[in-house]
Length: 171
Image 1 (cartoon, one colour):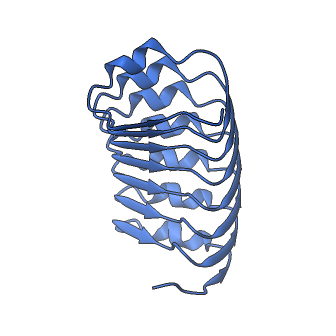
Image 2 (cartoon, helix red, strand yellow; image 1 turned 45 degrees about the vertical axis):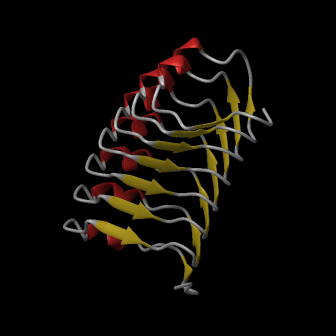
């Protein structure tokens, strides 16, 4: 199932507004994630992992309020995690690991109360672990290892009684 599609993701894919799933993973796609993908408001699954995508995660992805799974891992994405991802309240899985993301973990991720898996490991994230992550009471897996996070482990993580795996090492 590995392909060798190359080049950028076309902006025109943002016209496919009835699309529910977009799987472009494990290719050799390059360049930025198009802002136009924020038009795909029926999208439930977005898999772009395992490419060579670069640049920031578009703020427009925060428009995808039907999204259940967002997999952007194993790319070369940089810049901060957009606050707008906190709008994705149907999200069950968020995988942003193995990129070059910087800055703090947004407090807004605490809005994602349906989230079961949050993988932010192996980036260059800094600052404290937000107290707001304690709102994610459906969370089963939390991977924050391999970053540059600092400060105390929030007391609020004690609210995560469904948690099966918590990895905070290498910070």
